[in-house]
Length: 357
Length: 116
Ligand SMILES: [Zn+2]
Image (cartoon, rainbow over all chains, first blue to last red; front, side, top):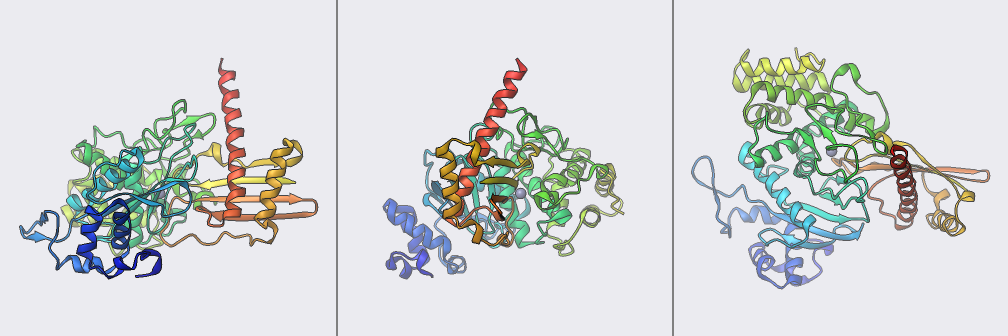
C-alpha cells in the first residue's frame, strides 16, 4: 500500500476483514481511514473469497453461495473544491448521510451495480468487483459530470442552467458505464467509436432507470438527464434517445444538436469529433429495436446490446456499420438466425440509415 | 490585454455554450481587469505548453478549455482538459468561466425582456 492511502500505519497492518469492521463500526475518523484503505487495497478482493462475508451473500444462479455480487461504494464529498478525492461522506453499508447529492450518488451507484449484476451478471465495472467511487460537490457551481478513468465526479450545477448532476439516475448509470467500456472494448473516445462509447453509456444509463422503475419500452421516457436542466430552461433533458435533437431548444443553450439519422451525421472536430452529437444515431437505433420488440427493453434489446458491448470483435476503432453488424449477429446467436429479434435489429439500423448487412 | 475563452465537450453538447467568450480588459472595470491580468501572470501563461495533454485513458465527458491571450505583440493559446490540476491555471479558468456565466446571465435576462 502506498503512503497516500496509509496515513495511519496501524491500518496498513490490519487484514481487510478487520478494516471492513472498522469501516462499518469505528469512529467517523477511523471509518474514513479504514474505508480509504479498503477501497485502495488490491488484496482485498482476493481475500474476500476466503474470508467470511459479513453481509448475507446472494444466491448465484447455480443455487450455491456466490461470493460475487457484492457492491462496495464510497461516496466522497469534495466540499466545493477541486481537490480530489475529498472526504468520505458515505461508505458501503452506512445509512443515509442527509446530504442529497451524497445519497443520490450512493443510491444511483447501487442501482447501477444491481442492474449490471442482476440482469447481465456483471460484477461491477471490471466484472471482478471493482469498488465504485463517486465524488460529489466537486468545484463551485460546477456544471459537469465525468469519468476520469477511475472514478465518477459530479458537480452541483449552477442553478441557472443546470441542477446537480446526481439528480438523474441515468446520468449516474451513464458515467459508471464508461468504466465498463474502458475495461471491455476500450472504444476510442473520438469520432464514430467515441459516439458508440457515448451511445453504450446512454443505453445502459437509460436501462438502469427503466429497470429500477419497472418501465416497459413503451412507458419509458428514453431521455438522458431528465430534471437536470434548471427551471426556466426550455428543455426536458440533455438528450432524447427516442427523438434525438428534441431534448432542448433554449435561447442560451441553443438547440439539441443530435441527429437521428445518418443523413444528418455531423462532421466536426469539436467535442472529440462530435461524440455527444452523433451518438443520437445509434441511440435511436436502440430505441427502435426496443420499441419493435416491446416489453422490458433490458430483457431482449438490452441483452443484444450488452452481448455486443462485451463481444471481443468490438474493437477500439469500431465504427457505426461494424457495430450495427455485430448487434445483428448478437441477435442471431442469442435468439436464432432470421428470427423476430434479428429482423427488428436490422430494421432499426435501416431506420437510421445504417445497413447492418 | 485581450482574452478568448472557449469550452467544449462535457456530458452533453450545447451549441449555445460553444461560442467563445471574448474579453478586452480595457473594457472591464479596473478591479476585474487587474484580477484577470494577475491570473494570467500567476499562471505563467506565456511559458505554458499549448497542450492539451492527453486525458487519462478511458476517461469520458471531460470538458476541454481553450484560452487565448493577446498582449501587445504576444499571443499564446493553452488547451487543457478538466479537472485542471494546476491551481494557478485553474484560477484563470475559473475567472474566465465566471465572466462567461455573467455574460450568459445578461443574455438570458435580455431574452426574457425581449419576450415581453
Ligand atoms: Zn459520456
